[in-house]
Length: 91
Image (cartoon, rainbow, N blue to C red; front, side, top):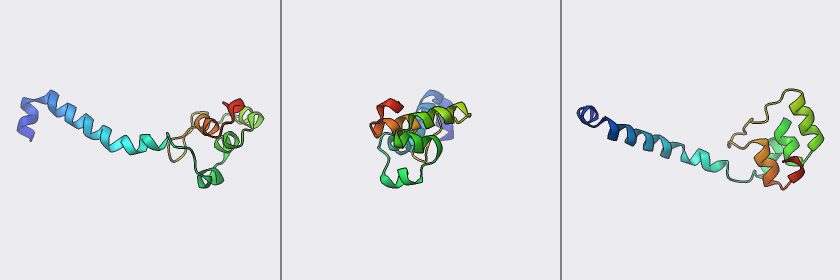
């Protein structure tokens, strides 16, 4: 394999990139799923405010320095949570 990597570095690199992409694929797909009731029950901070559509609380938390791009265990941001829960005023 090493000998071929020296002869065909472009092909070897492409194979490695595809392997990494396939390994990360399941994680990326989880962000596209709505949060479960269990997820919502353990949310805190911006995720909890977004899940409940609490616009004033979201604004307060961001003003206080919370990261609006924070992700939950399934790579969902508060924006995605609010959208999944149809709290469009919070989006």
